[in-house]
Length: 263
Image: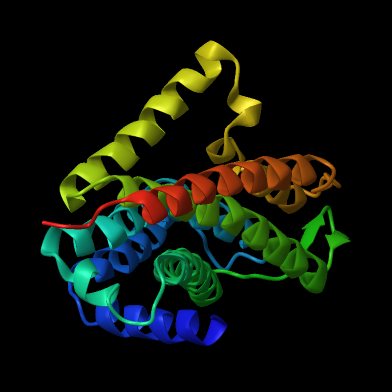
């Protein structure tokens, strides 16, 4: 089973990497990171510009990047249904659950790609035009370069979790739809509606997308020299994301097993 999933996943990555539209996501994310230098200027003035990295990465990832993850993942299954290619795929030894698992790995890889690109671009810009050493105030070193870089890695990994949950959400919507446009509109509309209503209805703590910025707020405090910890708040975010991912994947696998993909 694992071998079939991995084989299907490699086919997925090869197929989608040859298409033009998936590359809009990386392009938009890189442009957003580059544009952050105009709203958060940096310079070689003897002070650390690590704050730029902590500003540019979530600014690019948690709106544009997350939106691109939803668009990409929402089209994965619905696109196959719309084109009719899913009937060809499912006559092979590949089972429906394995097919869906390969789609989820594809969406997760896309989310990870956008995350890595945003982080790499922000570090390159900060190193080229500013300084990325430790954090100090009044000549006193608060965090060494190694410590602040480690905090960035933790923030980035924690930020990836709600993006992966978003990928699972997009795949679920894609499994329920018959057309890519419908799936994309439903995925984006559902996210925007939930994000708009969460404060009014008081369920923001229970919505996975609330935790997109949590780790970056801690990192921003570290850049200011404050000893704000990631945990235990991060543990709550991880638990909420895991719970939603289980729900999304459960619905997706049940829908995939019961759907009729006939003409």
